[in-house]
Amino acid sequence: MALLPTKKEQTRARILDAASQSFRSSGYAGTGVDGIAKAAGVTSGAFYAHFGSKDGAFEAVLASGLDEVIVSIPNFQTEFGPDWVRAFADYYLGEAHRNDLACGCAMTTLSPEVARADPDVHLAYEVKMNKVVDLIANGLGGDTDETRRTRAWAMLSTLIGGLTLSRAVSNPDIANTIAASAHTAALIAAKG
Image (cartoon, rainbow, N blue to C red):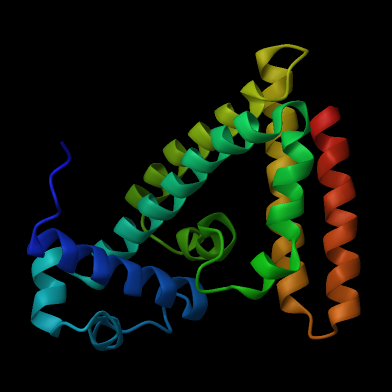
């Protein structure tokens, strides 16, 4: 029998969700504690009680966002079998995901923020990204572990870069061309 979350856990989850959407859509510099608290329906004091600082909230958002990817990769592999890479690329570069910055993938929206963060955040990010790459590599088959990991990094880098570029242009036709090109390149990278 699963226990229902406590009020404190529910409040923390609301704040984390509001922080996640804000960091993903507005970046670290464009996100304020008061705005997160207001979006979560709590006071700034409640925010600080749960996360201690804006940095603490960012670290929690980053961990949670990368955990979403860590859970989703095996789900794609199970649901789509040998065609999971295509299905994942379809989703990742699809128009709905491209247009949903606030709820889009943390790898794309938060990686540039990590580049400006302190070394502890870099390390935590690296640990989670290595888990993501291991999961992708395990689903690629063939070759050595090292070769599958190299292909996984190439595929992932292509998807993240393609999503970033397609979001950055204003012309939808160009965005679609970028997404289609990245989709093709990601499939090629995955196959080796």
